[in-house]
Length: 599
Ligand code: AGP
Image (cartoon, rainbow, N blue to C red):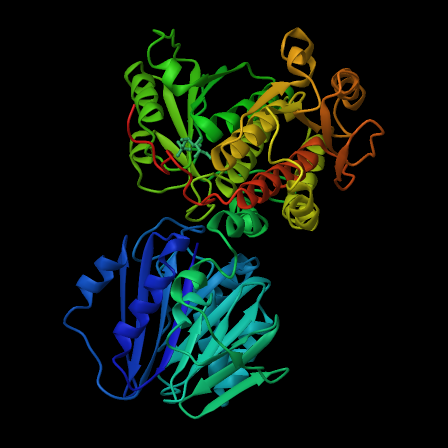
């Protein structure tokens, strides 16, 4: 997602900014830009796509001597990834970069337009720079004008602003989006939205608290309401990218709280669900859905099958892409063909999409990587906005896929009238609660770490669950086998008695997903059957279960999807801790690749 850098010093400014942005590339972005201020003049450059495009555009530009600059990589949320929508956004004489979302930007924009301000972009960010210039007309002190601007913003932001009226000065503010300031013995100052660009440049850094506002010049650092507290910065670039976590997978599990908010941003509203990606007539004539994917993405599809039928009352069929390709499928033009892929490059899914297109079906991709092959081929795409996922074992991408599919099932429900307005509102209320659930679910990490030592042997794991917790069981088993190399299967809890129960003994580990909000008693009976055959049971549930050998207590929730997301995190943490104890490379498990571009 978006990244911010800033610099004041005597070294060449453009290179400092672009190098800083390069350290943030791993977060994903679709355009980039910089504004460089020297001798009272500001030059700004923007480019869509990779940083190399920005480098190309700026190759004949350089600075010599003291100056200041700000830079940004943008992951589009409000408005398409175009050069006009890329940051920095400019006013008459000032430039701004921003991470986060300005929730009241429409009201501010309208007010500014009434004042005669013309807007160039579709972004929420542009209001900041125009508002600042309006406030600057009203008062002589520019910092007062900046404070008056920030006071009017609702939402989340990390903001850097430069203006020709204050040479060699950067104004900054932070609320809800991270911002760090660094300094070194050479008198240079740096800003960044995460540690990575500061490593090797800054000697010490201050992590700004929410509500911090201030400005820096070559010899002043002014922050309100409290002074910044600088601490030494250590570490190498690799650890910085992992943000202090042992593995990318761990970092990505912990990021789920943040990225889920990004996934919902501008789409999950208080009483409505909105996808700018789906045109008005796109779903006309659609009476059924076919979902097609591989691996973890297939599990997300399977979970959504329950949601689409239950909430949107639309028939759904879910297929594994590698099977679909050769089964000579019957495809009707009333079917919406949805492919799900983290990478957007999976060969089997891509081919399935091609077949659907050739058969004349409308196609929708749910994908994490913009401009990937699948995105380019599908009629339309909903990006999951999980940010780059480095761990081969998918975590945050899965979480965001499930979220988008849940959102989409509500979108269909509204369109088809299968749920009334109140019921939709109620569902949206639960959706808004998901990031909090993901954060709270991390509380069991320590418990997973301790429990993991008991699950390093045995002749196999069965993850069991019912309804949407069956695909989650499949996903738990896949996570475990991918990184621990232990044998694990996911199974519908009610199906165990039809065969697999024959395997039950003390060395068979049953991981039982026992949500309270969905078929609790039914699942419990199935687990009792396994316990009676002496299987070792680990129950994951908000309710204590007498017959479990071990349990991980989850928080009580009033909605199955909230239980789903909490249990998902537990499964991810447990798999990771078992794999770590076994000494495996969690991020790059043997025999696996992040992008499976072969059949
Ligand atoms: C997930 O942990 C796996 N690495 C794998 O199953 C993956 O989900 C599958 O290869 C599909 O990839 P995609 O989502 O990029 O299409």
